[in-house]
Image (cartoon, rainbow, N blue to C red):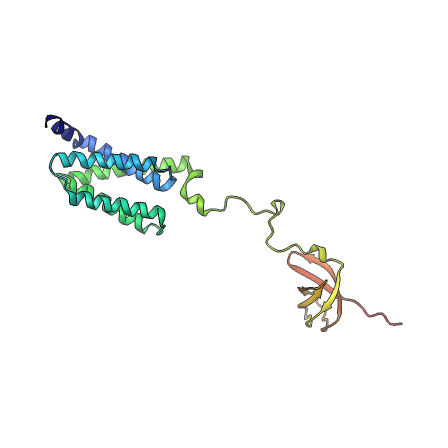
Length: 221
């Protein structure tokens, strides 16, 4: 009994309780941001667990308080599995903090400790984000590799091979229309001249997706 009383007095001391809340908040927040294979989450749960243990041994925390806290943990875990754009994280945080306040012998004192722990946690998390920003969860939603031509990426298919090839207009070109070139339907454009349907054309220029053609003049004998 003496050991339990001493342990309870130590864990519920304002300084100890505040540190435990810091560990709990920072551990879980960093786990959500950086996915450390559960190590940071384990540290966070341990911090909150010792906080609740202290007030449980002191006779203040009940199973209802633990249930509210447990629901918060479940919601945060669900956020990792089923992203909800932060909704589950917010609800989980509310349950976590609600459980912390309910378990305390004095909710006002607990609110002060929680406020201090939150401020310190914000500073630590901000520093971690700045230092390890290349490892954050947000990188999953950012295209890291630049899509450049020298790496084989093009916004439009390269049709420079069409220059010099001949074909036939299958729509009037006024000046844009469609032609068949080497058996392929190609959207083409003239330099401003009108080319009737079924006329023979030749590709004179390709600029990106713009294929420029002119009419092949008929040869008369």
